[in-house]
Image (cartoon, rainbow, N blue to C red; front, side, top):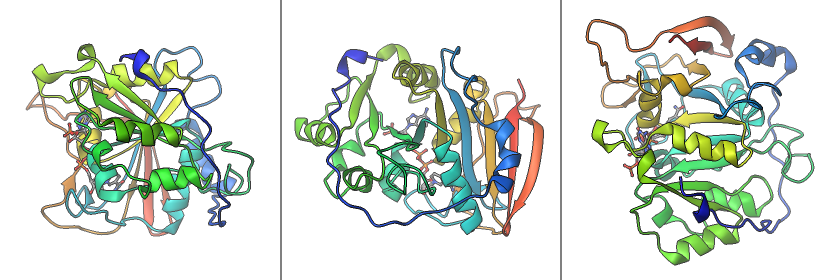
Length: 289
Ligand SMILES: NC(=O)c1ccc[n+]([C@@H]2O[C@H](COP(=O)([O-])OP(=O)(O)OC[C@H]3O[C@@H](n4cnc5c(N)ncnc54)[C@H](OP(=O)(O)O)[C@@H]3O)[C@@H](O)[C@H]2O)c1
């Protein structure tokens, strides 16, 4: 990662915001605690603590199709997602999710910055891995994550692109104006030989170097499947999956990593706990080596 390409971050301008808060009780949060980063967990590590989390249907789909945002889980699980965001210093998504969902990528838990709290306290830094700049090309003042930053309800994003991707100067200027950053992924962090768009260690090391000690990786399918592969699973500390009582049917975006040993499962969780949440079930675990 070429750290020299990181831009200076001015404070984003702040507009008054309407309150739209969520709460998640400490009772509900208790079962999650041992799967979350602690104050000590990442301070001595080179990589941030990584939590992989997503909502899935009963047939392992996370959306009806790649370009469609699909609400799967109930309001309690939504509050949990925002609670999880409040427990991480960054939240990361792939380019397709940024394009399809136009997400705000902030935390709306009562008491965090912008939702009753001071400044941007408790707001995670959004990170979009966009190797070919497909999402960055679409960035305008109306892009939700920038609007959210402008309203003082979240931080502006860090965007990673490949170092051979040409980024229009106007898009970089816009990103900088809102307090965002652009980082080139250097050739050493690409893994084209294995057909992997990016090697995660470089991105994670760069985030750690910026003081981001924990990252919640939210999707979409390609990013999750990549991180569940044998090659990258070691960078994942916890997996938290919400399973909603719905079948999306064939044709959806599926969580199902490549199998590299046809005779064995690709990944298995250990230290597993299940918890009902509204009509959903939340499963927490750690990836076995
Ligand atoms: N239910 C949930 O919890 C949930 C959460 C998030 C998203 N989603 C849904 O998931 C869908 C999008 O998923 P998706 O699978 O199409 O795309 P995705 O995982 O969001 O993005 C894939 C893109 O990210 C880039 N990328 C960078 N590094 C990568 C790596 N190591 N491995 C794979 N991709 C990498 C690539 O961009 P380039 O091709 O430009 O190189 C790739 O095409 C949307 O419909 C969204 O709504 C659901």
